[in-house]
Image 1 (tube, rainbow, N blue to C red):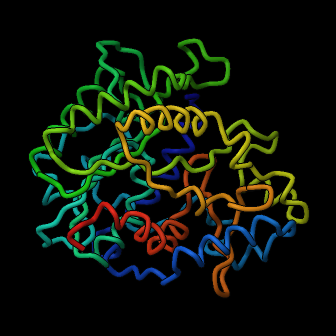
Image 2 (tube, rainbow, N blue to C red):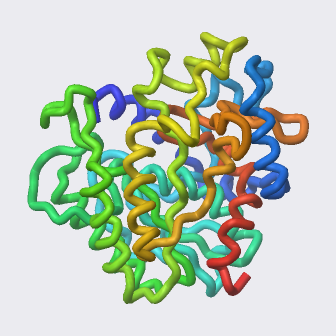
Length: 345
């Protein structure tokens, strides 16, 4: 991971920190799974962007999503130094229905943090406490290491591995009803040899790391799910980001869209391939969230905004993450997908 992404991520993720009071006040619109899927399909065919000063968020605010994503800070989701594990994550790192005896634990990096808004709402709807134990840039997929090689977040592979072990031990102690994992493959700075500024593990390397994490969590005796990777735009276009595409090609947007059946971002491809391997081996369950981001018909394009009701929601806050607004508006649709794994709702 290059220093540019580190600086960008630090600004974006730092801006997301809100108080628990603000988080609890959020109310998600009630769009169903079929409504969101239909809207994604329809939006993928529209070449001209909506008024980008009236979208949610506006284009100017897309990189500052706000919302409850990282209000449990700093140790539940540290964005700089590695941070110490929270002593009592079941009470310190909580969203959803905070007093419920039913618990969802979320593990991972900023991808898990990105989904926290969604599961916070699901927890409120279905009476689940939601506990987040995540670390920016620290992949949750176990990679045993004593290496001092620095990840882009300013900590080492060895520190990340130890934090992952701590997060797994904490999860087992909590005895959750569901475990949600999400994360990228390991990113390293360009100084270790990648001309592009990051090194993604190959799917062949990543798959057994995913399996190792699932195995380590087995004493928790809870279903484990990983959301399907969202479209990631880094390096796919000269324009660089979804926001720059919208601002530069507002009347020819479809030329900048990724395809769910084609090139869908290097990290997304790696993770999807690794997950397919482990799903076939019945190691992990993948939440089928792909149709909430990419059309399930036509050219299977992944729109940069989705119009639901009278509002157009920008999907991406940067090349790697969805906006908090979109994470909120799809909560009820994800709830439908996740219901199989939530027996106590």
